[in-house]
Length: 253
Length: 88
Image (cartoon, rainbow over all chains, first blue to last red; front, side, top):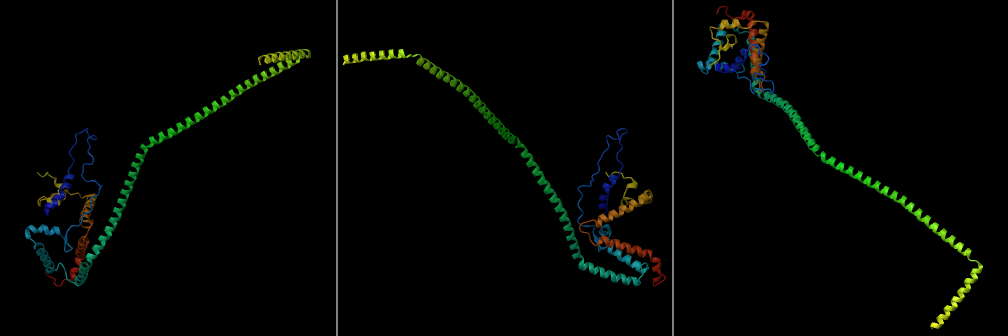
C-alpha cells in the first residue's frame, strides 16, 4: 500500500518544508502563530483497532505490498521458500532448542486460541469501566456548573425586583414619618389648647370673683346705710301704699 | 502537480533506488538525530499497534519475535557447532 504510505507522509512532508521567506524588516508584525492544524485539545480519540497483523507475526501491509505482483499466495510461497532455504543451508540449526521452542509455541498458541477472547472481553470491560467513571465525572461537573449558571441567572432576575422592594420600604418609612408628624401635631394642639383654656378659666374666675366681691360690698354698704329712722319711714310708707292699693282694689271690685 | 520535495526530507519509500546512497548520506547522524530516529520509530510502532482501544496479540508478539530472531543471530556463532553436516 504505497499510496497509503504516501498519503500518510504528505502532511509531514508539507510541514517539514521551510516556511515562505518573510520580507526583511517586517519580522515580528507578520509572524504567523498557530499555523499548523494540530492542536492538543480536544485530543483525537484513540483508533479502534491497531494495525492488522496476520498470524500474529506479520503485518498486513506486507501481504498488501506483494499482492499486485504475486496475488494471494505470494507471501506464503515466499515464506515457504525462505524456511526451506534456512533449513537446507542450516542457517537455522535443528537442535534441542528447536524441540523446546516447538513445545513452548504450541502451548502458547493453544492458550491464546482458547482464552484469547475471554481475556480480551475482560480487558475491554475494565477499559469501559474506566471510561464510564471519567465520563461520569465530566458529566457531573458539567451538570453542576450548569446548575450554578441557572442559579446565577435566577439571582440576576431577582436583583431586578429589588426596585419594587425598595419602593415598598420607602413607602413604609414615609408612612411612619407622616404618622409621627401628625401625632406630634396633635400633641402640640392639645397642649396649646390646654394652656389657652387655663388662661380663659383664670380670667373668668377673676371676673367672677370681682363681681361677687363688688356685689357683696355694695349690699353691705347699702344695708349699713339704712338707719333705723329710714327703716321706720320706709315701713310706714309701704303700709300707706298697701292701703291705697287695697282701696283701689276694693274700688275696682 | 506534486510539490518538489527536497531529497533529504523525502521518506524512504519515495526515494528511488539510484538516489539511495545520497539519501542515506544526507540523513542526520548526530547523536540527537539518531536518538530522534529511535524515538520516531518507537512512536510509530507504539501508536500503530499498542496505543489503540482494542489492541491485539500482534503488538507484543511482533516485538517478541524480533527479540527471538535477534538473539538467534547473536548466538549463531555458538549454535553453528550443532550443525549436522559441515558442508551445505
